[in-house]
Length: 303
Image (cartoon, rainbow, N blue to C red):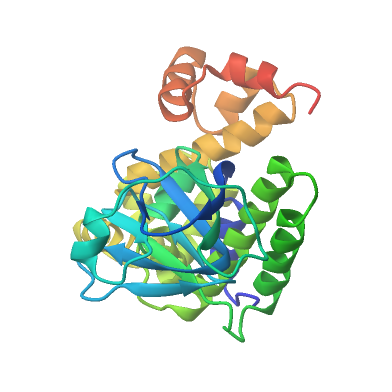
């Protein structure tokens, strides 16, 4: 389970996300459900029974059994349904959920929620990952994930009702375990994971992380990889799916957030990530994070 690449580990450890529940319950009879069109990542944990996952572009539906889970990292055209055939699933109604009953012999029990990935570095990491990930209950390489799923099942059995806060945190942890295994197993991933796996670019990434306050012109970055300026820019974009400037900005803003959380001043944080002007830093930070740095610092005071 442990990645052998310290840069990949650093990226996964820096992934910032929130999980929030929107459904815990049971569907019976003929039904379909989807969050498509809401422009949000979502997850669905099957805690009782079974259902079918239909994703546009897949030739066949995937059967999801109790103990399985699907994590949808993009706003995909998909649906969960009681029907195996896509044409039938589209015709079935959207039904309100009944109360969860893990002892029922029919229907399917679900724990469903949304993921919100923080802007900046976290968004760049997610963009290079698959659109969806399926966790299988019988996967022998995911013993820790199965243990977490068991805790989710135990919480679902809680009387009179499960704790939404605990289910959100357990779902969050479950996703991180599944994501780490996915990154370890798949060599075809793009984005920042691909950048971190490439020896020359991983070395550059390490330098950018350690020295975010340096000017970092394109020529300096290219020199660390042994490529010409034009070859470096092309290869970097191919691997990361982003320009060097976009990745540098994300790394700088992540470091600035850490400094502001540690109660450093806006001026100190800006200078540490290469900004000579508080005004320029404030504009860049606000655009990247959605809050002015002073407001962000105040928001995290005392935490």
